[in-house]
Image (cartoon, rainbow, N blue to C red):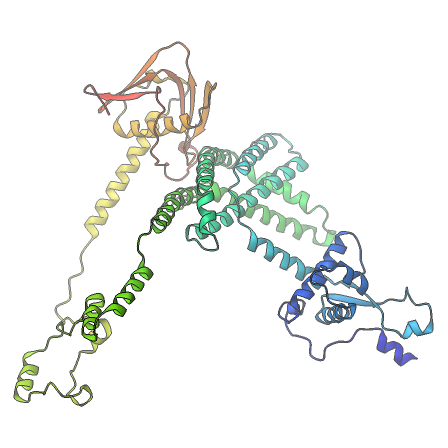
Length: 549
């Protein structure tokens, strides 16, 4: 009786279980779809707080369309999953009512930690593989809101740990979603541009919505990206980031056991510092490095003409323009309709350019040798004397006699001149920023005369401010795309007119109250955003010598 009991306490095991990551072994066997359904049934049961399942319950949970004919196939699948470590089998004594039932093979099954981890990995794989991603403009607003909340919390003498931890957690979560979805969206957008895994009709149907979607996100990224960079710079400039990160790390490690509390706090602090560094680098440019937000904006801007080029190619293809396959079919029809082989040979030479080798040349020694011992034209190729060809000609397709090597050009003077030009331009931009900094609200008419560089920078700032202007607004505040300058523009209702004189003409329009702040004097960001903008009608115009520029 004892030996029989030992034989029935555990399910049958395969003689040689797979080595390595055995919980994933069910993916590469013939009945892989059945094993996936069985494991999915256990995951659904776990969500309903069911721990154990009997074979009959697993059989009933399977899809009716792909369910095996009897429960024995499910039992065999369960035993294999037990052998691979995905499930654990325990004797089912609850249904034993007689001695015969005790000797009968009955088990209940539950997920193991390895099996649950394997299914979680497979679920993540399926989710990432099917994700198209999205450009989350709402996440940008949420990041601005949380950064402002952190400024308020950091201004307190004793910051509330709970508030700081919640604000940082929401901030990093929204940033992670924004970055992951943007990366997935740009990948799917590139596949769309390349027409991979997409129907042409579906692409033509949603191209307009896609372009509008990109333009709307780019506008939000320009408007909010600089604001986020400014808030990050304000937090870092006042030294408020490190205390907030330490508070969040301390609260996160509060539940750790006493013997590992110090190590857990150090690990949490390092993790929070890495998250903040990733957030700052995503929105703030550094010396010699562009921010990810700027790269994303450039990639999104570049994808719009690429989409339009794809549409143009599709329209040309639909209009019946000939492609290479159609050309080959037409050529094949001409070959079939040719009257004789001589005509076909002439057509072949015309179509593919395979003319006699007139491009080969020989030197004087070869000509003298052939003159002394001519080769009859009827001599087969295999029996004729070989033509010796230079190995370099065989390898590269061209042959040049070795000559004197070219002298290495000295580009030191050109590099020095480029460095002087770059230094001069940087100085001019710095002077233009200092010239435009108003030090407080002033009228637009009080700016005075501007040189061309300062006027160009002023027009970009004015364009950024007017891009955020909405109906019924009287005041707007915005920053340049890299967060280097801030402009506050307020409309005046006195009907006055402002004139800004430049060497090229006069800029005139309704007078406004303007406040320009040079943020680079305290926080260094990347190079200024260079993007042409146009002022709306009625804001201003530039005239010179009586002509509109």
